Image (cartoon, rainbow, N blue to C red):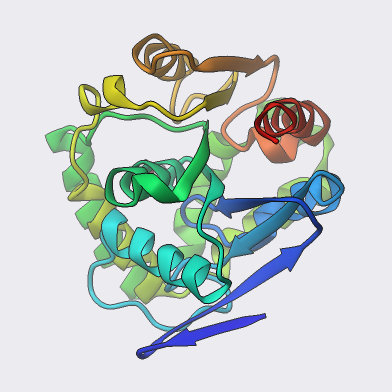
Amino acid sequence: MRFTSHGISFEYDDVGNGIPLLMIHGFPLDRSVWRSQIEGLQSVARVIAPDLRGFGQSGDAPETMTMDDYAADLKALLDALSLARAVVCGLSMGGYVALAFLARYPGAVKGLILANTRAAADSDQAREARYANASKAYDGGVPSIAEAMLPKMLTEATLDHRPTLRTYVYAMIARQPPGGVAAALRGMAARPDRSEWIKSINVPTLIITGSADTLIPAAESEAMARAIPGSKLVVIPGVAHLSNIENPDAFNAAVKEFVGKLR
Ligand code: MLT
């Protein structure tokens, strides 16, 4: 489906019935990262999965997309669908956006799911790397970014023994438009440190990660779980950054249990 408003345009899936579940993809991906969730969760929720602006089949992004910019797009989508509240689930960069969404629109969040993400801001070194990668993206470098990111997204076992999954993730990254990739990199570099702020989160929160995530180590999720009052942590054994893809059954089971309690 297509959402268009005030020059903003993006594609989204909207399937299933029940509690609205807004699924925010990570970087540099698109909504197809959620295919196993769209299939596996639509019996318990209304799954709404957009391509963030600049990614997938969405419209062009400006030079920088801050996490607040993405959050504002998503709020406009929920408004257009007449949905006052949703469970907001973000994976990695999607988690940064989910936190920005909660900070801006607390009344619109029924529950929060933070998958393979962190509350902290970038270090100076990470920020420099983001700017370098933003330039690289424009110089035809998205496929090389895909090559560099693949070993951080999936475990070695998956890369070696599940070629279809490997190709699927590589192709997803490699096809992303340079402008969208660069805009997200600049936006992530500018995101605030929310390590203290998350202590004030007062909506039900589920944190999911993979024990073998090297991009955002499980220790970061454990720290968030300690900081967010009443939150629940699920560490899926033997999976890396894209925990929802490497073990969709475990990921979906955790989400189903969480959503079931919110109904
Ligand atoms: C992601 O998976 O969304 C990104 O790699 C997160 C990041 O670069 O901080």
